[in-house]
Image (cartoon, rainbow, N blue to C red; front, side, top):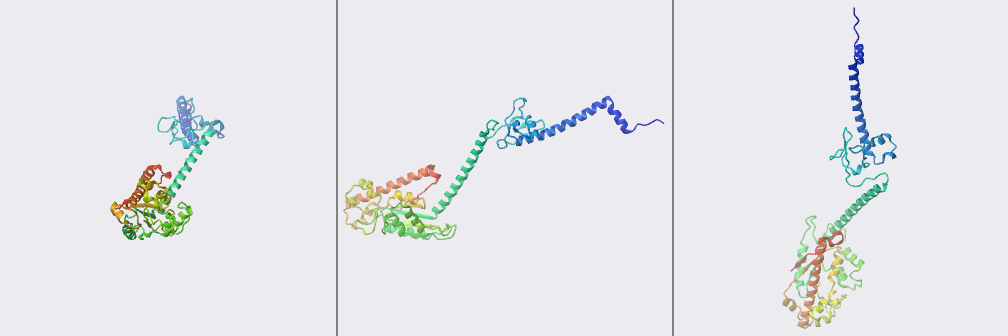
Length: 371
């Protein structure tokens, strides 16, 4: 009976044949190729994600070896070291080409130039620049929050000055405005507006009444005004309106009240231009430019300009002070010119601030109503 070779013997015999040796070599080569590609890809990914240090300075031999693979397509010119925060999404394919979605084998930097082994200061400088930019953004955000809080305070504290020369019917208009203001209700809180007419603390600060000796721009005096008129006692939920209506000019030459600057007899013998250019007249009863600059920092300051026919304005006080008609006409027209110059100045200031001329971009708006 003939001997039948076992399966193992037949397999060994086939491998030892010439064709068997060829097939075995091809299988081993294929396995080796796939294994090498897989490991090389892992090493290259590890190198690209972690390494921004020159190869000769690296202690990890795997990273060192794979860095040698990071060459351009011609295999000669090395690419710059990679930094994670400088690059877009990088894919490494099985052929070890670095692809940023554009040209395989080429890395495109987005923002900061890469540092090389001879210039670490460049990387430190770029990082410091980024930190400075973050700090500037934080400062801008804090400033914006502060401006918002200041604006809320100002919106809850409104000063309305009823402008007009003497005889422009303040006494007829002011009570109407006061009644209308007191009837207002804040739609957000349902609380009525708190309205104050001609408060003593404001008149002493603006005009020097009640024996006030401090200058109008004294910070302690201004702080006292807002501490009494617009206190922060209810988390900003109460809207307050302060109404002032002292005329231009005010009082008498022998007025017992303590105006900082009294009515001057010389105004009755001056021309309209002379009155309008007189420093005493510009500051009587208050310097409007200075008032607006000082108080609009803390409150929403608005103006209502009373416009009455000139003959009626003259007639309303014709016999009050025993003044000669022509002289009184020049004086009243001089104060009209002072008011006009102030309002023109105010409009120019608003145009400048609303176009970005104000520091900090804080826009102001003084509503001017002609009644």
